Structures are given as structure tokens and as C-alpha cells.
Image 1: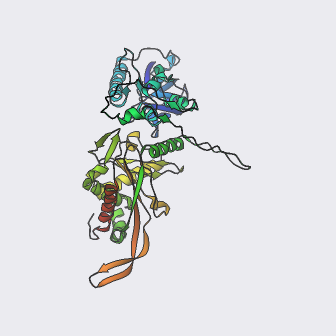
Image 2: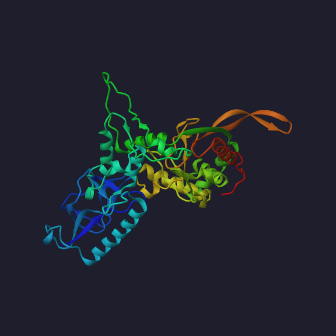
Image 3: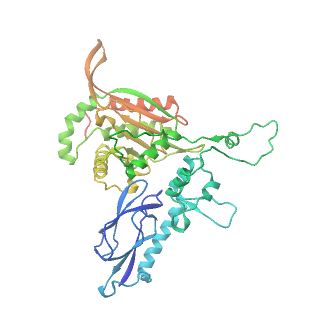
Length: 449
């Protein structure tokens, strides 16, 4: 029986490892081509790994709960005669299989060179860290020398997320003071801020002690909720949030949608919601204010060329996920509608691919879906801004006319724009959300689709 390795595939440019959550096949069971063999979870999304061939599952190389690196074999599949079904899994694969594995390994090496950081400078040895590990280390102010001292439980001694979190948990309770080698500073020079900060005391922030009361129920967070929790806390710690609000009169937009929604669905086979219209206005405003479409790396501003708009979507479990419309500026309204509906549908069915929830440069969250009139959303790192669209409600409003002001019933909504005050000042943050509102208010009621 020929033996084929089932490789953990590449799942996005920043994903270097995945957790084996559930084996869908047992050793000895038959597998069809493209049949799901195992469920995996990354720090971004859950997915399945299909079989690359029809055969028999001979051996699982990782147990449930283990963390496997991208590009590593996770199972051995037997192909061919049943007479050798129990053959050793250590046989050398066929030349064609070896060539395929070699090509995959080349892709993995290239991806690693783009996404992982080499931290040893003056040593013959080397060690690599995944972007997730580096992110946690940066957030927790763990120096590279500390990171190098952590024992890794991963493949080849690799430091995993679990290792870093355990290290943080076991840190001493007394605040740590970084020690630096004294340097001679000329009297007429002022020390750099980084030099002053290097000797400051790092204070650990801990949550309050919780006392259980009679009848209380303890509910363990699921994996996704833990990730969301960590990401939100990190975002608030990293970015000083400021939120600007505007109220928009979207009466023209509501009348137009009510007029075309039936014919649109009949013609395109899709329901048109307000979300793609909001995204269209956001894209136009980003083109007017491109410094909203940025990321911050230390003291370097990265101005994004692509406009990739994420749309926060609530899952049936109550958790949140943010699928991304890549190059949203290249779509017309029909294309945006189809992309929004497709991503939302597959998000609810847990069928999104890792690449579809990464790479966002700006995020929209529609809190109006839940009847909320406004919100103060948390920035989706490493972006610097996020827009919340509130519920559209009929309200009395003052309308200016050539013959004087009148009070009329209008469709009104609030837009909330949270932004990173390190790089986005109130003038830019406020002007951007005002421009989005302008595009919505000026919507052409006679527009053809």
C-alpha cells in the first residue's frame, strides 16, 4: 500500500500554526477524495482539512488539542491494496508524492520568510516566532531576551501561544524593572524617550477577584470568545480610542431601496440590504481621506493601497467574526451586494476560509441590526478606525426650504466613528464620518442598478 502524507495547508499569510480540534475519521476508516478528515482551529477561523486522495487513514500524527505547524504532515493515508493496510507508516512516499510535498515545503518556507521574525543577531543559532506569539509579546512588553528564554513545547522547540501565556501567568507579582547598560550622554543632549521608558516600571493590570454567590453558574468561554476577549483588550490597550458622531438624513436612500428591492431581487437573485450601500459610501470617503486607510507599526505609518472593508457579523453562537471584502473599491453596488450576502451567509454556516477574514484595512459594524441607535465600537487591530451604523428611525426634523423652514418626518440615523488618536486627529476622524454621511444623504433616488 502506498502511503501519502496529509499536509496541514497554508491558511493565510499570517497563520503559522493550527490546533487540531476534532478528528472526523478514525484510524482504519476509508476516506474519499476531498472528504473532510479533521477539523482545525487557528487564531482567526475554524475550518476542515480534506483528504488529497481516496484511501484508508493509517495513522494520526497529532492528537486532538495538539498544535501543528503549517506545512507539517498531520496524518498518513494508505492508498492501494488492502493486503498491506497495516504496513509501517515510515515508508518513503512515491517520487510524485515527495515532489508534491517538496513544493508545499517551498511555499511554507517562502511564507515563513514573509511572516516570521528572526530574533537572534550575533549567534550561529536561530529561532523563529509566529506573528501571533510576537503580537502577544509586544502587547505584554516581553523583550526579545525574555522571549528567547521561554522553553517551547511546539515542534522543534518552537514557542507557541500557550507557552507565552503560561510564561505571563507565572511572572513574578513584583513589577519588573528593565536594566540597561549605562551610556554616556553629552550634557547638551536630551535622552531619547525610548531610553527613559526602558527604565520605567511596568505595572501589571489584573481583573478584580470574583466572589461566587448561591445559584451562580460558571460558564467556560469557548475558544472564539477567548480570542475575541484578548483582541478587544489588546486593542483598547494599544490604541487611544476617540469616537465622533454624526446624524444623517437617509430618507432618499430608504425611499430608493424600498422602490427597487423587489425588482433587484428578481433581477439579481439577491436581497439588497443597507450594508452594501454603507460600504459604498465608506469606500468613496476613504478615497477622499486616504489617511484613514492606514496601520501603525511603532512610529511608522503604513498607508494602504488596497481598500479592504471588513463587515462585523454576529454568529448564531453569539460570537463575532469580521469577513473582509478585498478591493472593495473595484465593485459596483450589485457586486458589493453579492459579496456582502455571500460572506454573511457563509459566516453563519461556519464556512469562511482564513484568507476571507484577514487583510482588512477598515471595518463597518451595523449595530442598527439589533435596534441600537448608536455605538462606540472598538478598533479592529491593526486598523486605525471603525464605523458603526445605527438603526434608521423615523423622526421629526427641520427641513430648510426656499419658503422657510418646515418640520417633516424623515428617516434619520447616527454614524459613530472610533479612531486611533495616535495617528488620526479629531479633524480627520470627524471629517471622514461627516463625508460618509454626506454621500448617504445625497443618494440619487433615480439611480439605476
